[in-house]
Image (cartoon, rainbow, N blue to C red; front, side, top):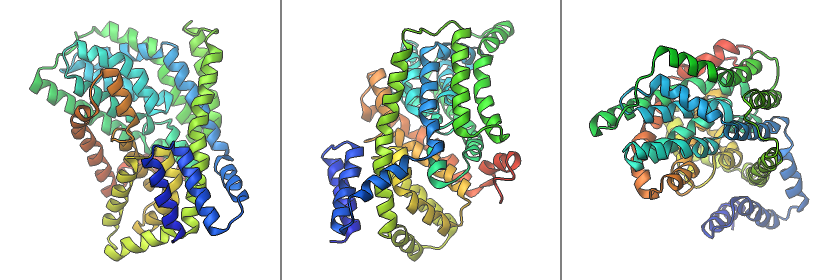
Length: 430
């Protein structure tokens, strides 16, 4: 049997048998390496190569930052500011939900952390205000995916490290689609609120708006420090993450919201939360290497060019491919395993590496709200006590919004590319 078929077939069989992703990746790769007669030291070498990356050091730091922000009462300040700014619009709590997720995305870089942190506050509040529970869950889950789109993003750090694309440029490329998705989610919420009679929050005074902005301003400066520092060449993504954590500690002390007795537990949880995906990253590195070595990118590229050579059509096939794999694999695992195929198809489509990167990240973000993987949807349904099928039906129009923006950005690349081209011209050459 062809080694490539053995690799993929054994992997999917293990997934169906509910073997954890990291072990399924490693075991299927080991079987293929044995079939090929390669030394088993290849496994160790490839696992080490997959995680031996300085930019990946930013991941645990951003995870720690998100945990500090969540446990330090920062979410409350963001909720108060969002309530002052958009709460009075029809469907107010829905708009607050999206706005908080957008702000929180600029702090944590993790969609799952956003779902857990924001969802714990907003879903019960929306249910209490007579919002449809399925809609409350759906909106929380899909707005949380902004955590991997709006910088800083852990997925962008990993993509940049694996694909050798500027992480700072990826951060900038995520700003416009992130804002567009958030705005369109709020438009949809407003339309639904008018149709179904969802309530608005009381309007706040200009003075109250100013007070809430003043209280949240030091928090809002954090993503600005990160992005400005990276794009200005002051520090790398990893150094930016370290600066952000230090700034986060200062904020916690300034707000007197840090409990030093809980600090060892927070650090320990951050280490565990980092080690689990990194095990998958290491195992995925082996499979990605095998996929490239066995010629899968060329096979798939040849198959697609046999169907069409139209650049737009090839790009749409890339999006379709990513939508499928995103339903059963995490975005991080998908990027590492299928990067050789993604890059080969990108060359066929004549895509700019940066533009390809942001399209990949936007598309894979939808995998976080589509079963069976759908980690954000699963977290939100547990908080809201809503069945997954019911929540998924409510989330379909919101998925359509993100897909629409992906297609617009695919057809008009400058929509996503103008910021990195303007602010990092030396990096984004064309």
